[in-house]
Image (cartoon, rainbow, N blue to C red; front, top):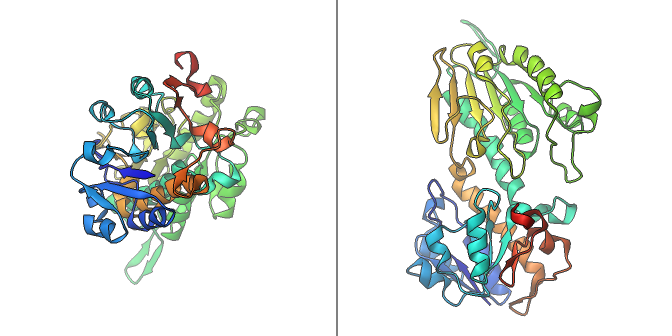
Length: 377
């Protein structure tokens, strides 16, 4: 079986879908691996490192894909790249089909079997394959580091002969994987940390990391989590009550990091312009949801915005990619961990009844088959 690892070409993307460690393991499982030249450059991985691991190097995207059985990517291909795919090839990547349905349809029409790694079911045996979690973990860490770097004061309390430096107050909005790592990182840096989420199960997690939980705790709050562990869309009444509570809290914070995402939907607004205006000059907001529209009013994709009252809203593109070496390594292991149980004597034999396969398969036999994408959804 031939595995192709092309270079990522979408803007802001620095990661690569396989690293020498995983290439070597695929080769040991009987696979042939072809890597496009320069694919690992953004993650400081030269072609020679891949060759040493047993891969061959292709000079172009089309050459890399030619004759491949499996194609491993980070992000979905561009429209032009899709034309290089061959019938019967299996593509594994983050597809974002709700935001780019025509591409999924085009690949299906070409007879490509498309698998969206971000659809990986959130069950115990899939944890090592979950690209959203592996990348969010790094994003949560990096968001605090970027905020601390931009903040004009220290993070921990410092007792000096010249006086005391007060600790920074950090507020994390959304306590998923990214939020939990942000809490842990801010705590390690010595900040006073508070956090909020609409899922009641997160309160204990927040407390276990030494932070204080902030939320309106009513009946809706107690039932605000899906079976898959995601946050539900809350009612307008709950949003109003929560906003009133949060508004008073945000005004006292030095750093606010927002992480709230709803799968397949625009990110919910958590921080209004009025809330931003209430913050002290020099305060920092990091919007980790900016790529899906943003949680902060006034946030702009790939820009740091300084408001009239001196608050900086940071809207980084591809935060995991700012740690490209580690992000690539974890994503590559996610790919390996999913595929390796289905590799038999160098051939990929997917069990179509397996919950993981059914969970991520978007297309088969020229048609879009994932239930969440039926009827044009």
